[in-house]
Image 1 (cartoon, rainbow, N blue to C red):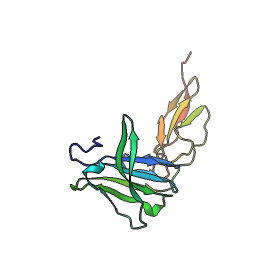
Image 2 (tube, helix red, strand yellow; image 1 turned 45 degrees about the horizontal axis):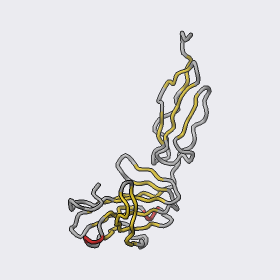
Image 3 (cartoon, rainbow, N blue to C red; image 1 turned 120 degrees about the horizontal axis):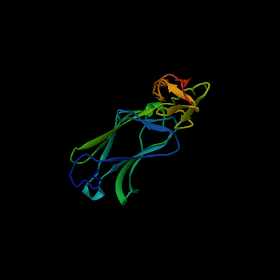
Image 4 (tube, rainbow, N blue to C red; image 1 turned 30 degrees about the horizontal axis):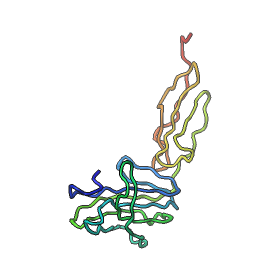
Length: 178
């Protein structure tokens, strides 16, 4: 990360998410649920010029302003911020921060309220969810009680389709276990 843009490269983008659920897809896209407020902060020294935000959606105009932010180990960093308030599906698209020298960085945002249904409990199977909301990206981890083993996948991920990546495994009794 080069927040001072010492190498004149593409600017880092810091994401600040207000209340709301989110996940990063394996392709690096940001998925947020409806009504989330997010701030995209293009890290670039103010003294080096004025970056601009270019967005692919024409749904609405987004407020933009200079802010100072604190990152771990770095305080009072200049950032040119774009704010999406109470996100709607129509806000989804590509958000490009473009520097005066033409270098850019892009965030793809997808806005959807997609959750998975909880798995139905099975005898001796214990299910631990990484999030109580079962939003996209939540992982269900499976284990069995003492004297049993997991026959099938040990985990499953909530996909953007609202389906789990794997079916529920079974707990089988260990044979010859003493």
